[in-house]
Each structure stands twice: as C-alpha cells, then as structure tokens.
Length: 368
Image (cartoon, rainbow, N blue to C red; front, side, top):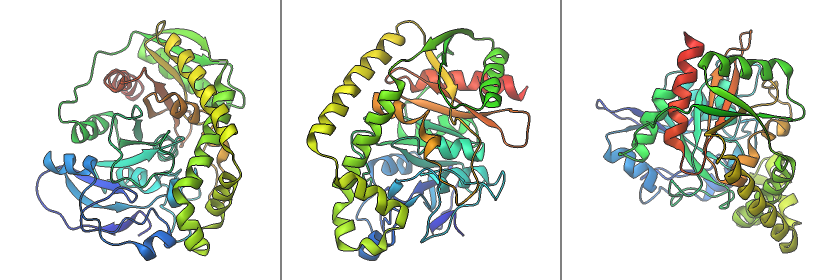
C-alpha cells in the first residue's frame, strides 16, 4: 500500500492516528520517505512529544504514512514508496508533502493524521483530497523528534475528514484545546494573480452562505513574502539534509536532489535579506488582524494537476502564511464539479481556536 510506509497493530477504543513518517514513533524507524535516510535509520528510541501527548490522550497509532520525500515537494509523489492514490480521482496528485496523511483520513483508514507544513504541506494535500487540514502557529507544537526541513517555517498539525476531526486532532496535541467563538468579520483577500475564476467564485459563495460580514483586503507584500519564504526554505533544507545528500545522493529522488542543490548556492546575505522581508510581512499581517478576525482566500490557485506534473505553482497561496507564522485551515467547498475547491482561512498568531470555529460555520453552511 502506498498510503502507509509502516503499519502498526493497535487495539482499543481510542481514535486511530496516522503519523507522517518524519515524526518519531518509538520502536519504528523514521524514513522521511527517503531511501537514503531509511538505509541508515534505526528504530526511534522514543515518541516525538507530539506523539507522546496523543498516546497519553488515548490515541491508537495505526501506522506511519507516506510523504513527498524529505517533505520537500507539493505533488506527494514518492519514487521509493509509491504515490498515495487520490481518492477523488486516481489520475490526480494527492498533494504534498503530507500525501499519505490526507489519503489515510480521506479513505477512513485513520480518524486523525499528523502532517507537517513548511510551505503548504498540510493544506495542499487536504485541498487535493477534499479533506480538512490545520497548519498550526509556528512554535505552538514542539518539533522535537521531527525530521526538519526548515526550522524557521516547519509546523506540525492535524488532518481529518472534517473540522470535527481536526478539533479532535488538536486535542490529541493539546488536551485542553477548545474551539473559540466563530468570527464575525472576515477579510476576503483580493488581487491575487493566477487564480482560477471558478475557485474564486466558490470561495465567495461559501463565505456568503456562511453569513459572515466580509470586507475586501489586499496584501501588497504577498509576492515578496512568497519569494522570501522559498529562499529561506531552500537554504535551511540544504543545511538540514546536507549530510544525507553527501552520504548518498543516489538515494534521494531527482526532484528533491535538484531542490537541495539550489539551496547549496544561497549565501548568508540573501538569507538575511529574506528575513528582513519576513519581519516586514509579519508586521503587515499583524496590522490586518487589527481590522478583521480571519482572512479568507483559496487554498490552491488551480485544481489539482495530473500525477507526473509539476505542482510548484500550487504553493503560491500557502507559502506566505508560513513566513508569517500564522495558523491556517484548509477545508473543502463546492465548486460545481466532482472535485471540490478548498477554502483557506488564516488567523492571527495562536488563533487556532478561532479558525476551527469559523471552519465549522462554513462546513455547516456548504453541507446544508
């Protein structure tokens, strides 16, 4: 099965949890979906803290799920472990990098899955597979025991078939988690280039059905934030995976190997410039959240692409959120066809409680 890299026998009445295979589970090797890593891996000595918390809350770990190798890609395809099959349309990518996590909850093989999100890796597969995923605030969930891609951008978050499942996932991460009150004022982000008009229309229709007060918002720094996030990601990915690359470059797939080589060429001065852009971007987002409670825009600018097709453009609406450190929720909404669109709700820092409440309102409105 291409969804799971390792299945784990479990029993009991607790929720079934699938864990992306870059998060340590005691007694199981962590492969990061990479042959070079897997060949040198030994069983993890202990659970990552985010897994230990879930076990203490009664979760049953059913396995470690597949991913885009080293969490470094948006398609979710994997040359070593196969590609998880998109349950909406097998010809389309499942999305990455948390492809196995999205497919596991979409097919009912897990109640909750943990994914990681560096530039969209929870939200993109959720959008591709018609499920719900929460990118958490940077730093809220500990990253100990997680294979790093970019420590400045990496987050761990829950994925599920619906908003209720994501709330359950947050309770496995934080037992005291309780949804907040629904937002009343939503800032509809406008002026983004390259968005399929049908997807934009689907977002507007979902917000109207939810009866939020909607005001238009323009974020002039979006493009600069996208470029800065990509530069930081590439530089830190090279730093974190350099030892694997130098030990066994042939054990890394071609697309990921090329991205790592791009990171090798980025110098400290360019990274410093990107961090200055990040500071300005965070100030802009903080100011926006003094005027609206939640931001809304599509998760993907276009429908999922066929397997074997480049999907870097699908990160254009997700990556700036990671640079800001803000939480964001992706959830499916009707788009007039068999493949739903995905609405992305972005919240202020530490605003997960607000986001899941708003997401539940949207989910009820579009399903009703």
